[in-house]
Structure formats: C-alpha cells, structure tokens
Length: 89
Image (cartoon, rainbow, N blue to C red; front, side, top):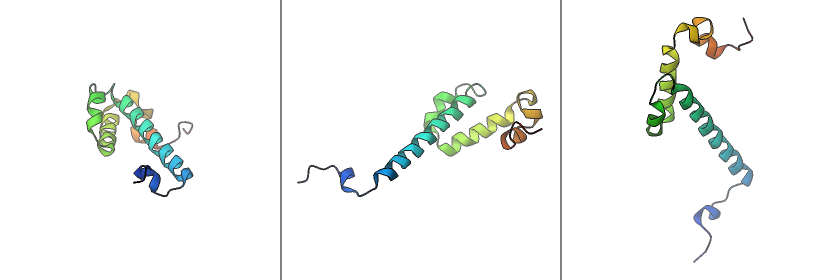
C-alpha cells in the first residue's frame, strides 16, 4: 500500500494550486469585509453570516445598502455611488 495521500496522487501544477488558493482566500477576505460592512446597518448579521451562502450575503448587502438614508449615500443615490468612480462629479 502506498504511503502517499490521495491529494498527492492527483496530478496538478503547483502554480495552478497557488493561484486557486489565492483566489479562494481573496474571495473569503472580501466576503468578510462585506459582512462587517453590513453589521452596523443590520445588528446581529455577523452571527447569522456563517449560515448563509455567498449569494444570500450579497442579497443582504444590497438590502442594507438600499436601506441607508440619503445622507449616507453619494448624492443621495447609492447606485451612482456603487457604479461611478468617486472622483467624477
């Protein structure tokens, strides 16, 4: 019986694994950033987030952004704020 674990028997390029790992890490990092942005608007969201899918988190983020009063958004229109660079008038 071979002493190699199953993962070592599956052929794959190391550079691919590094890139895939980096992408997974970046996605998780940004997702948690979104979760922490929603928490002040929807208290308790942080404790709920671990049971949600990424799509559900995205939906809750959109709902939270839409619920912000106009004075907390760029020119009172969150869509402009999310889609236009801040340096444009």
